[in-house]
Length: 324
Image 1 (cartoon, rainbow, N blue to C red):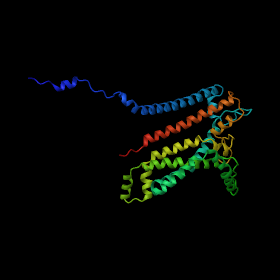
Image 2: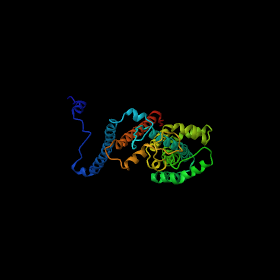
Image 3: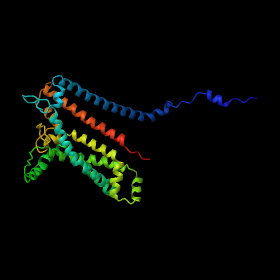
Image 4: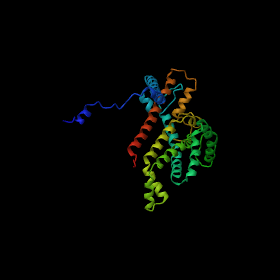
């Protein structure tokens, strides 16, 4: 008697469903998970629509501004006096003021942040690291307006006293140098923390191999760990630069509100964020051309910070080292 072909019967049988609806008694088990999933989805949707709304408002209001002011004049003009009788709409003084304070802050934050990251990652014992890292990150929790008055009332007098001893150097009460120094202190925890995380992600085997070849701790730190973590370190630098560009209260309080087209850090300057604060808290009527300038400046600031963030992501993807 012929035996039935079991393989054909298995092929003809319907495949079991991979996704099964929970039974009546399992709905209570899956309900909390479904609620959490729905809440997380709504949070992500809110953040997306918030970003779209902000960008849409900036673009719409800036378009109304550029209907009355030439884009070429806006991007190439060296005078910014929209609140004066003789109006000029060249944004270069605000851009140079922003770059002056941000680059000055990076000169303070990058070396100090990188050196502290090297110490925390390679030299500090575990107990010291657990104590120092939270103390360092406390700097990130200080309100920026406090930093601003610290720069104006403490750092600026010290700089002026030093400048009095040096011929041909005079520092104004409001200046970009004090704002840059204090802003560098403010972003120091970001540089240090992100760089230290990138260094600690380097596999221990690379360090041990370098030590086996007779390298010192300094050589291992500078010639093995830093090159291996370079993409993360560079990304930390760029993100910190973006944070410095978007800082408001420090430059508003300490740097002044005088839009000079200059690269001299000893004189009063005005940044893009400080101008937005000046107009937003002033008596400028809503809907006027002067009021619309804050949207044009805000859109310019958004484009700069967006470019910095995209650059940091490109650096991470392009130069990231993957270890197994």
